Structures are given as C-alpha cells and as structure tokens.
Length: 274
Image (cartoon, rainbow, N blue to C red; front, top):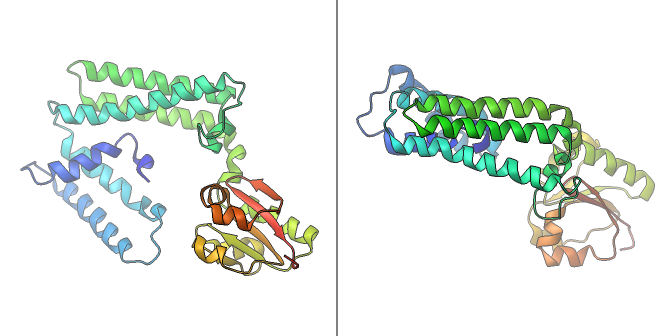
C-alpha cells in the first residue's frame, strides 16, 4: 500500500526509523498518531488474514506524524532527496506512458502491466502524463533553491490528484482488473454453456470468497502444487494467468483446454470426461 501515501512514502520510512529516536521534538499529537499507527500495525499482524489493504486506515496517522516531525527541518538534505525521488520515478513513468502511447496504444507484451496498457494511447492518459511531468518539474524547481520542502511535496501531491481526476473517465476500462465480479459473471455464463456442475479456482487471493458472486461454493487452490496433483473435472476453472506462464506444471495440466481471458485471469471449461 506504499503508493497510497505518495508522495510521503519514502519520507515516512525515514522519519520513523531514523528520526524518531534522535532527540527530535515531537508534539503530543505526533506521539498520539505514532502510537495509533504502531498499535494498529501490531493488532492487524496478529490476524491470520494479512491483506495489505487492511493497513489503509492506519496510513493517515503515519502521514500526520511525519508532517509534524519534519515540518521545520528545511536544512536536512536527506528529506529533500526523499521528496524528490518519488517525483523522479513519477516523471519516468509518465514519459514511458507517453512514449509507448505513440504506438497507437499497442504496447509490446510484458513492457507495462496490462491495466496500464488499457489506459495508454487515450487523450486522458496524455493529459494526465503532462500534468504529472509538470508537477515533477515544479518539484525539482522547489528543491533546487532554499525553498521549503513542503512546496515541493505539495506540487507532487497536487499533480497526482489532478492526474487521478483526469483518469477517472477511464476507470470502467479497468473493471476486469478490479475485483472478481466481471470474472464471476463470465464464469457463470460459461458454466451454462459448458454444462459443468461446479467452480474451481487456482492462484486467486481468497478464491473461496467468490461464492458471494457465484452463489455457490468454490473449490479453491492457493498452492499450485496441490492444484497440479488434484483431479480437476466437470468444473469451470478460474486461474490467474501468471500462474500458467510461470509454472510449467500448471501449463501442462491445462494443455488441450481453451481458455477465455478476463483481466488478469483465464477461465476454462473442464469437462467431466477429462
């Protein structure tokens, strides 16, 4: 979840690890925010289910603590480096999207994630990239002189917010990559057409919870070795596509079956006679 705290991500790590114990004045509010973050982190670490999104409610408290701790440290060169580095990465990413978009949106496979390819080549993607590059330029300008680092981080934050607003109309293109709803709808259609009786998943995070979309239980395999040695038949099989390309045993098991891709997943109809 590091990206949800941008552009404070690296600065937060530096503040907590290298600044908290160095006789730095911290207000009572800052101590409260740090205690809330640590206690939330420890509590969530005790649960058996450790999804990164569970940490989202704790991130704002760490951001508040960071701002209160380093707001007056304008002469710390490391802070300026950690503020500028995210902008440099954002600048490179924006340049990459613009460059590959020159191919009319046809980006070579494996260069960028599939969901990025869905956005590239659109006017909204161009505008968002220009905004991010302008924000990065403003950030470097603010860091080049004796200006407060808060001006630099504000430039990055505003450019990110504007880019997100510009990309909002493209969100429907990403529905296949967000959650399991669209994949579940396709799986139910294939089940009716294929005449099979059940559902099976492989490599899906908490795939057993797909029963909320499918209306019936799902045989979920989170360990690829267990899936490769299981008897899979008379079912609609939902597999994370990367598992097929990265595991030869999975690819061998699925050889001869025709799959339908949906986002990051591939769906197969496995007949009872297999």
